[in-house]
Image (tube, rainbow, N blue to C red; front, side, top):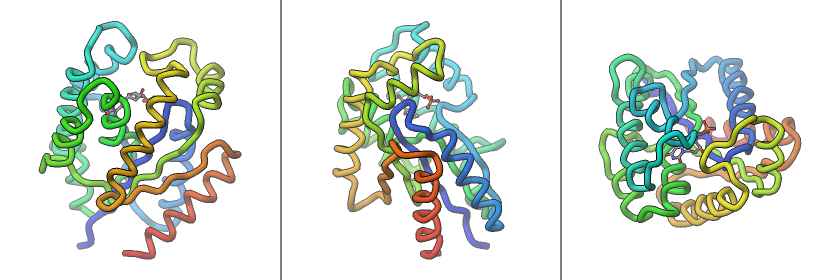
Amino acid sequence: MNKGKFIVFEGIDGSGKGTQINILVEEMKRQGRTVYQTAEPTNSVTGGILRDALGGFTDRNAHELSAMFLTDRIFHNSNKINGIKQFIEKGVDVVCDRYYYSSFAYQGIDADLKWVMDMNLNCKEILKPDLCIFLDIDSKSSDERISKNRLEREIYEEKSVQEKVRKRFLEVFGLLKDSENVKIVDASRSISEVSADIINIYNEFKGDF
Ligand code: TMP
């Protein structure tokens, strides 16, 4: 049996990932694929601790956060109930909102980037995505979208932080250009323009298997 494909969406906060993931997943199903949609942080115990820290309720440094996101990601891959690996093995495609590239971009600012990258990329319990779609918007547009959609902001949801995170994402994609399949999409346009690009990228990617 053919294995499923593993697709990851990344972007700074307010880049429209949720909307675009829903559109792509519908399109994949329309094309006859079976899809499992998921996100990080997960609903695991570690995911709860992370949400607490992201909400600013507990103070955690970037190294603690890196290690907790790593733990959550190993659980996300390997747990027996809804782990990513078992879906891929069964031929189900997995579409995930955020993955290790977020650890590189967010924690990689205050923690040692090489350490964060090494522990994620060299962990055999953590699958490498077949495709990463990065929704690229500038921090001003992201800030406007966050203001419209949120009553409270998480620790990273400040404009100056988002600017650094975006830069880090782009730097990391440069470092990984020979080993990871990353497509950068201009997400400052209308929902339909962005989704048309994403569906084209998906169809091209699908042509490879
Ligand atoms: P979201 O559910 O709105 O995408 O928020 C998740 C937050 O978690 C977002 O601010 C980015 C952050 N995050 C990290 O800092 N490192 C990670 O590895 C992941 C997966 C998420």
